[in-house]
Structure formats: C-alpha cells, structure tokens
Length: 224
Image (cartoon, rainbow, N blue to C red):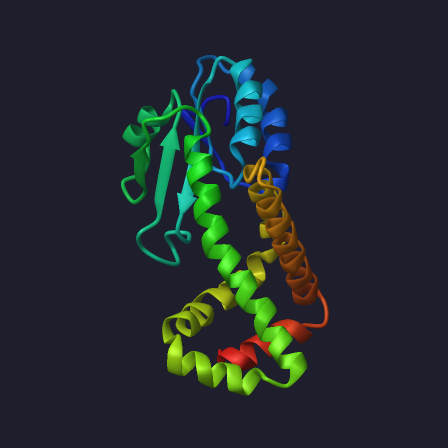
C-alpha cells in the first residue's frame, strides 16, 4: 500500500523517525512510480536532513513539515508548515481539513520552526511543573497558587490547560526535547536547559506509568 501511495506522511515518536525512514526506503524504492515523503516529526533540522538523505536514494520527493497544534480531533487550528521540494505538492493534495502552509526555505526550515515553537510552549509547561512540585515540597504550594491567581492568572490558566495534556504525551517529548537541545547548536546553555527539560519529561513519563505521585500532586495544585 505504501509503494502505491502518492503521499506518505511520517508521524511517529521523534526517537524513531530516522529508523522508520530507513526501514521504509527499500519499500519506496520498489514503487512503480515515485511519490512524496513528508517527514512531519518533531526533530531538529540536522535530523531531518539525515532523513532526507535516506529518502533521496529512493527517487521520491521529500519535504519536512512541522505540526503546530493538537490533533484535529481534539482542537481546531492545527497547521502543517512544510519546506522542501515536495512542500507545494503536499499543500495541493492534503486533506481539506488539514491546513498546509508552504515556507520559502530549504529542507529543515519547517523543523526549525517546530523546534523553536515546541521549545517555548512545552518548555514553559515543564518549568511550571518543576516549580509547582518544588513549592509543594517546600510547603509553599497554596501560597503560590493564590499568588498566580492574583498576579499571573494567564500563566495559571495555561498550566491548567496544557499540563494535563502533557502527561500522556511526556514519553514522546523526551526525545523531542533532546532534538531541541541539538537545535540549540553552539549555545551550550540552551542545550543544557533542554537536556534538563528532557529529564523532567522522562520523570513525568515514569510517574504516569508508575506511582502517579507527582502527576496527582500537579493535578491537585491545578484543580484539574
């Protein structure tokens, strides 16, 4: 079925994006006619260029895409930003319910946008979780919640919306945060920040799969 497809979208956990492309390359090479492979994974520009090199050997066209937003079944406003040779083709043949915006840039441009956006949004969620738990351990959680409600209600509202959504996805975000650390490149401080955030999500994922102690505490703080 893949070999007969006009368009293949790869949307998998970031840690296996390269492995999936390598595994599919022989299948795509055997296709009677080449299609377009769109890598939609939350990976760094360097990683997506590695994937592009794997697909280049199949004669399929390639684009990288960054998904901004939740799955369309959960929310409206989900956008695919795409760059590369096959980006315009992707925009033409994608499902009407999926908005595709073509970037004027090479392969890696869409992934760069995704890394920056995810680093900001998911990074803030992780920092909020870390500080809530630290306040809980220090006995300051009630006062922190009251002060957030008084002086930063928008931050509290964001945490109430985003944090419960983060828990079941945390296992995916560990590798994504490490891709963002790589995206930081020469900035050692940025790499260190996002390596720490990767560890924070790894801990959340372990808690979700195990005792649910920290996730319970966070939900209690948020009143969720």
